[in-house]
Image (tube, rainbow, N blue to C red; front, top):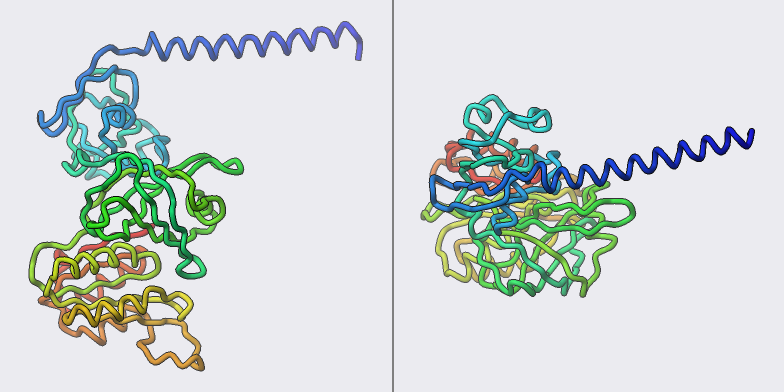
Length: 371
């Protein structure tokens, strides 16, 4: 290359780099000063709480800065749609990022993704009251136990704050760390520990192929390592009635049911309950001995594991077939029951249909879908 041409290329490149750096600085300054909208008020639930914040940030981040944590699995990038809240005033126009995640009914009811709502003036929102009690925790992993070939149980000691109050069936969000080019993410997992065990949190996490958080848990998370989580969240919990209970779960859907059952035992609940747990083969079963022990300690409780793909020569003497068929055989009339379901959307939808055919009103079917 001609030396003069080469010199020109170098100068041009340096000029472009310098321009980029200047523009980056200007953008930072613009965000800090030009886009500073001054003090703004976030009115929550018609005056139940009023927060004074500096405008310019997202509703999700500004609420978090005031220790009000809205569920979010993507860290505020608008890709999970977990952080929906009702924005009655001051939310501005629906953004293109939100558009695919909002149904016509949600638009009508002023539902928004809080990560995409910029607070530029006073805002009035509505959120579930349970979010006021959500906290962010720092903990230490003290046990990582393999339950099946694809499920680990984590036991986390809470360091700050040191205790948690939750209702059996609720969930928390575990925060992964960056690894091998994967960014940190937050994922929701049902709490499997019993509420009385207030200084610890347990999760049962099933590995999702190519899942960022589950891969971190399975391949990178080590005992003794510090972790962060927030919670509790969710409305999946036992209703205070005396109706007999049908529990149905599969895989890591065991987690909230395991919490509920032990909570019932501790509280000496006399409610009748049957727990149908669906798996493919015996290698997918876990906590069987512990659940059989609960049967002995809780006279009104019965555990029914069922295998859908167990080879015929293994000596399995329990129930076989799809969990829907097993439930239908055992409970032909479910009209007086309540049902609590946890697992994949497909399994839950199929079970809801079977229970409705058995006379159970859909209003008495409660579920937590693991997508």
